[in-house]
Length: 215
Image 1 (spheres, rainbow, N blue to C red):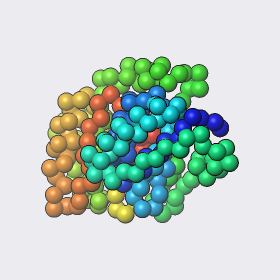
Image 2 (image 1 turned 30 degrees about the vertical axis):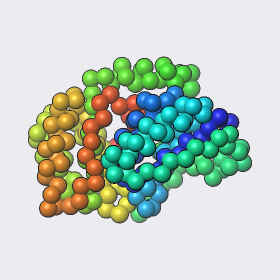
Image 3 (image 1 turned 90 degrees about the vertical axis):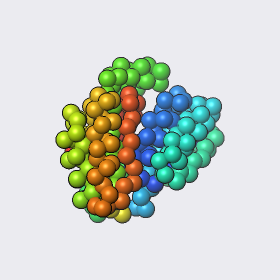
Image 4 (image 1 turned 45 degrees about the horizontal axis):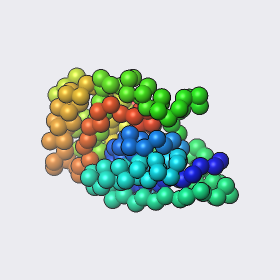
C-alpha cells in the first residue's frame, strides 16, 4: 500500500471524532482507511491522500475536534514505509468488554473517485442531518434521547459505547428537526450524568454515514 501521506487524528470522545471526520473529509480529497478505538476513550482516524490534501484535512478536522473539547492529537507521515502498515492498518477486532467492534471500516466503491464519492454523499443526504448526544452514564443519555425524540420527528440510528462510561446515541432527520431534538436532549443531561458533546452535522459525508453505530 503506497500513498503520498498518511494523516492521523486522535480525539477523546466519539462525537468529536465523527464531527472531525466530517470536517476533514469535506476539506480535502482524502480516503478514510479506518477509525480505531482504544481503551482510554480515544478514537483514531486514519486517512491517506496526497500531501496537500491530507494537510488541509488535518487542519480542518483538528479545529473541529478542539471546538468540541476532543483534545485532539494530529500528525502526518509522509511516504509511510510499506513495512509499517502491519502496525498502522488494523484488522477487524471485537472487544468483549464493551461488546462491540473497535476497528471500523467505511465501505467504498473502488470505481468511484474521491470527487464523485463526495458528490454522491451530498446528493444522498442533502435533506438530512445527523445529531450526536454523548454522555458519561447511561441514565443521562437515555433521558436525553427520549427528550430528543419527543421534541422533534427524528430517527434513532444507533448507540455506541466507548468505555469509561461514555455512550453516544446518533439520530437522523431534517436539519431543523435534528437541531431541535439535540437542543432538547442536551438540556436534560444536567443532574443525571456528564455531557461530553452534543452536535449536529448537516449533509454528513460518505465516511461518516458508513461508520455510524448501529442500534
